[in-house]
Image 1 (cartoon, rainbow, N blue to C red):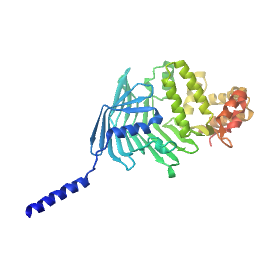
Image 2 (cartoon, one colour):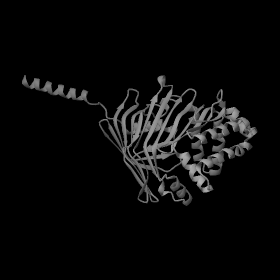
Image 3 (cartoon, helix red, strand yellow):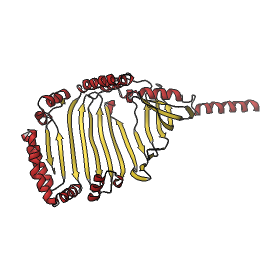
Image 4 (cartoon, rainbow, N blue to C red):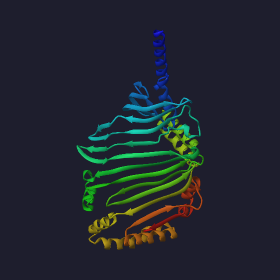
Length: 395
């Protein structure tokens, strides 16, 4: 009787253990195969020397990334943590950690640490025309990145953080990124003239950050880069933005196929010519929505005017007045009266009180790229009207 009770307890313990742990271990090779299938749009293949699976952690040893037609690059050990297989055969990965990077070539060393991706989703099957046809992740980040040249640190940043989110109904994506505490040592510039100018400007080093924000709509292929900004202390903020439509999944696949065909052709001249024609054809599918470039001054303009003026034997204020007289003469050859007046007025306003200057293009309705190319070849002076170009200052 005692023996029977003991046996039943042992069997119950075994059964409980079976339910408490996964019935099957993660198939590392299957995971990588499906990862490569979903990553095909990037034309990069991931390979490995060995896979080690420990519970929900998969480690790829001797990992390499190989672009189509290119040479493999060693990226070392890659660890995937919190790996789960879903009911469809796809995978989710909590965190992907990459080995710290440190490489020296021609006296220049680049190092990066704490590289990782969060919220990686690997579909079981690539579904053309949906977000499941591309490799998706929620975050990407790094720790410090440092570049040294001949033993001197010439560039660094404290880290990078990027986020990607699906729109409702998987209609598209929104994304943003920040590169923090960017520092550059300009004293290492070797060109004598540039070095002299840097010294006169008192800009032996610069520091600031980069920010990026945008979105991509799947159906229309509208790619909008709402913000691409470089903001440096005591220099200024340069901000770019644009929006185009037609950048669809079909467009991306056609572009990838054209590049793969070019790389597979042993006759490079023929391959380049064919690729050029393919790209020209693909551009016909795109539509221009808007674009803008602006600069918000943070003391750079006055420094430049003082330095350039000193070289001409005049003050910075006198240099500004001279430029205000020269600009109308320089742009007269454009043969675009309305735009010329805008440029002249904006330059005058900006030089009187340097705050910001913006060049924008916002047509009343989106303009197909073929129409832009036709205007550029047939009547270049009509492009400002076609694209709705404006130049403004201090607004």
